[in-house]
Figure 1: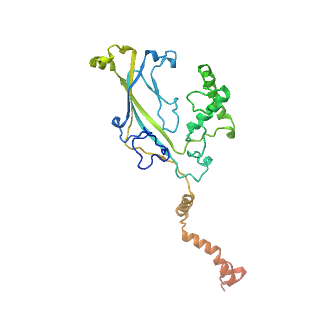
Figure 2: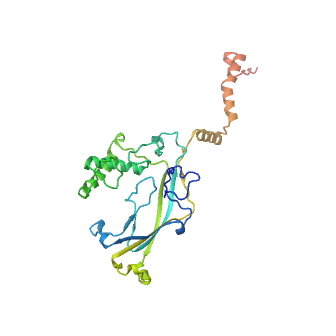
Figure 3: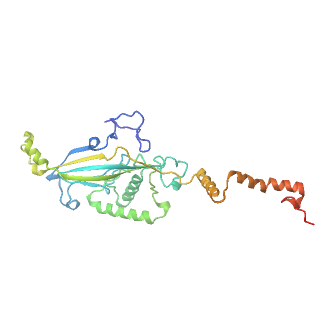
Length: 305
């Protein structure tokens, strides 16, 4: 399958891009337009009952193509179960804040901050790269699930798993307590995409179906040692609403609000402003020329006899 080199989270696909490109996209909501992994297979020889607190099954994480999956945010696909996942995207864009500095707008665009291990910037990618650098410095290796910082960097084996775990805790603690200039400065992305998921599952009695079908190629296969799971991921709705991050008060908004408040409280208008300027400048100058220095406020009324 060809890869779309022009796809970005901020710009999406180019106009006229082929439909058969990666990342794949769906044009329908519901299970008919979703992704179905029908036979997720494992057997007894693949199961390790000393790993993961004896919880068997598969971990599934949803993420967009610009970042690595965060396995701390996952859901389970149990053995011999069918799981249906309804997805609702949550998109935040900030297209009108380019004139502000990243410190002021509290976010980075993809091209504003360079990452050595990732093509595009996201907050999660930035945190992963900083954690990988910290782990490499303290443990002398990096975990296999991190992007390679250095080609010659050693991959951490099982014997260093405790060091990897401790380095993560120390890194998070140091990031919280260190000076701002010493931190990685991993601000959120100005354009971010996340997924809200709703899962439902049921038992999948696929062995009963195999007994009914009685396929010849399964005659010598022990079905009791096999485990199959089914995963279906689909969009819940055809459209979704996105959030747009903009400046709270721009130049025009500020003066519009001031004029509105003045007009509401004291009946102030543009004509009133011109009259105030007139009485404070031109009217005083004319009175001085006409009545002298003591008559700047106008002609004094004559006293009554």
